[in-house]
Image (cartoon, rainbow, N blue to C red):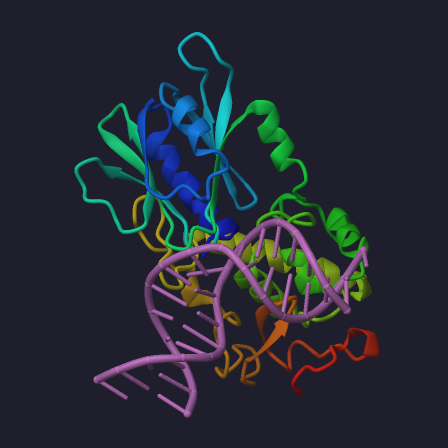
Length: 289
DNA sequence: CGTTGAACCTGTTTGC
DNA sequence: TGCAAACAGGTTCAAC
């Protein structure tokens, strides 16, 4: 569910709902997805939420120092596949799979819900936070064409794998990788380093357009994504490739196909997005087009 | 180095 | 209808 546009949507909602509030208590359900639940329990209550930032698919709740002592720190949150973070009135019954509840000083709560628990939550001091985020690649919305093209050439990997690699770009996931490749008319199994300059530049442009459009519609709700206020996104209605196997391509009418690339389902138009011609770019054992 | 497959865990959809 | 397999927005790690 949560890729850059969805996480951005949630971060924006949280900014309006919880920034400025002091966290007065925490309650946990299952904690196996947390780095150190005891550290959260001991360090988070008493701190004020100074801001909510998004870093790729991570969210960071910036926390004030505790009354007088301690230094600024943050709560790092990754939503994994099914994580949700939203504010709710305390008296509202909790949804199933709610594993963390942060009571706020205005009587409301910040709740983390995650059926599969592929997410992550950690209390980290500033330095540790910076260390944790430093390996991440460029922000896809900020990266320049030059930098983007350069990053595609650093490794000999398929373009789909490069787009999904958080060390290359931070925040792109399966949906937006496929949507961007469709828009740029690039086959997902092409080697990134072999794209022409024009193709790479076109992909850069397509990626930014897609991500901006998705943020404007508050993300994609495939099955259960909702923002910080519980509202679903609308971008799924704009999907042209992702999840559209067998349906006609919006450009040429050819049926969208689904193959496995980089271990992930990849949807593409076999006509608009040409199969890589050279042997080195063709996967062995792949089902024919 | 890059790719693949499995693992983490639960819920939903698909297929026989 | 019933049950089992397949699949899901993500990340990581061992093995080739």
